[in-house]
Length: 387
Ligand SMILES: Cc1cc2nc3c(=O)[nH]c(=O)nc-3n(C[C@H](O)[C@H](O)[C@H](O)COP(=O)(O)O)c2cc1C
Ligand SMILES: [Fe+2]
Ligand SMILES: [Fe+2]
Image (tube, rainbow, N blue to C red; front, side, top):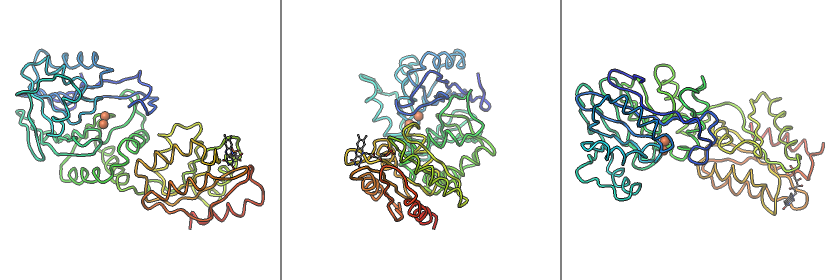
């Protein structure tokens, strides 16, 4: 039983067996589904768990309840990694009331066929409070801080912000890296990257509160210096500003020719004092490339031509960047082809649809293998990128 503050307990579960979170993101250090219990005059359960860990979560809840009945289930977010046990909770605890946003309550029956919510729900809106005794939860709506029904709550006695998916990270709680930002950044850009404006709105609300602890639905509880750093990074990330000085260089090469060009360009950048994040898109899983492409303000994309188009690993990255609203960048493009180079056109078309992405000249075309004669053009491209 892990105590967060007086009468506030952590009852979340670490998932060490999961390979892909949301069936998409590799989680080499697993995933945590966080959930909390406040035992006051009224007992409030905050969110549930992913169905994958239902048994462990129920056991932890029952142990922490010590025979009490929860009065409320506060649902900050309807996504199944947090809501899967809602129906079970309603059936298990006949006097339980679900507390959620109006939108969340509309969504709830979509997930549970035949669920009977008659007299079992309390819809809350911006600024509403839920008194529990010594503790009171105040609700703030956070639409599109992942889904439209999301809300966060502020516990007014202990000054805890229950932040839903915001400030989450990949990794179980028993395997967190010292560097919170690493997996929190990959989580943020891949999951919330598109929603910079809603995150800014939430940060402005948070700035008015005397927060001591942030409790996200994933990842560690944040306090003190770590919390201040998380707030600082979230502000940068959600404004799409460059967090890191340097250049992201992503390449997709079939036979190694484009890879050699990318390495050459990386050396040219380093010779100009730049920090370079060089990434082979054929071996790195795309969510890691998305993370780094967002973190830097400048990027080089180098790809082989392929069937009058582009080698798919590069297409895949650019498609992900497009749907995640990648923006405010300066980019250079290098293509490679043996008979009718086509990758550059595809890259430029995709990049030109993105907001505030400046494509610098020249587009460098390599024919099969880089020659000495290609180097002046590459130098010119690197200079233009850094200009
Ligand atoms: C399936 C396949 C399709 C290709 N399609 C094109 C193409 O449409 N136009 C072109 O110029 N080269 C095409 N190529 C050739 C490569 O783009 C070219 O050899 C390039 O130099 C490969 O660079 P790399 O060594 O980095 O893989 C294709 C190669 C393969 C394997
Ligand atoms: Fe979510
Ligand atoms: Fe989540």
